[in-house]
Amino acid sequence: MKYNFDCRFFSGYKPCKFKRPCTGCTEYAPVGTRIAIVSLEALGAVLRSTVLLEPIRRKYKDAHITWFTYSSATALLENNPLIDRLVPVDGKTSQLIDHLEFDVLMAVDKSIEAGAIAERIHSKLKLGFGLDKNGVIRPFNREAEYQYDVGLDDELKFKINQKPETQQITESMAMPWVRDEYILNLTPKEHLTVKERRAQILQKGSKGIIGYNTGCSLLFPYKKFTVERAIEVIAMWRKNFPDYTIALLGGREDADRQQQMKSAFEKDAFVVNTPTNEGLRSGMLWMATSDMVLSGCSLGMHIAIGLKKPVIAWFGVSCLQEVDLYDRGSRIQSNVSCSPCWKKSCENNPKCYDEVSPETINKETRKILSGL
Image (cartoon, rainbow, N blue to C red; front, side, top):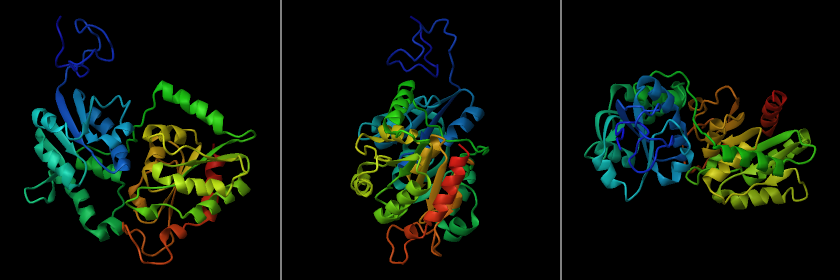
């Protein structure tokens, strides 16, 4: 047997996806440029980094792309046809990192852990962010300096900068930004599951489903409403949009909050508490049942963007201008003078999550639903 060892689809481990002999294969795609992407952490940021894939394919038409990420994020990158090799970074990865060689490294994360991995990877060209021997994060290339400055200058980040992070990371990797979208692909089987789940929760007489992403990362607790404010918003929806089902969407850390929300509407079948303990990929499928999604600036917001759902995204801690909804939905800024701040704790009152008007959410909901 003769094998195309240089083919993009050949791994040497098992038959490629085309399941045919290498000899005479019409899908043979010789690799010219081997590219490594390092995007490890903050799950929403990993999903957002998929905007790099289309620009890479345009610039390096013969590329083979290897993506290094933490195991917790792999569910966000599965079934992505533009990623050739997905490598979970764990205790078993060290030898692989030291062995592989690349032509271009794109190191997205500005963190000590990601920077150390970026420094270890063998690549002729390194773009993005690395780590010096003193443990200081530094940009590899001139194009990454603007994003580096944004992270170190609050005046620039909070008030001056108007570039969304999708633009910043694309330009940091020395590629033109043309507003490429996230890539979040479901399998045919998953599309069928979404259809079945939608039929399961869509109440009789409903025109559609409003999804409410109920929580956020424990790292930034102010990116979610209080349970009391959440109940107020849901009640507003039930009053003004009585022919829509409300789906509560969240992860394991949101289980108790969601149950409290559902308890306030215990006898109302139009408020549905979806499972929170089935894993990240399953949570994505529950969100995919929705016609629109309300969310704070969190992983749920990024998943909704990736699924191309209309999104009402509210911002208190984080920067509204750094998020692109791709003209689907609207962004709401909390009505407090200290926003944004990127703080994990706060002594101020009122809190930013209490200064997002339900009336504004109602107005934006009506806009979206009238256009469906």
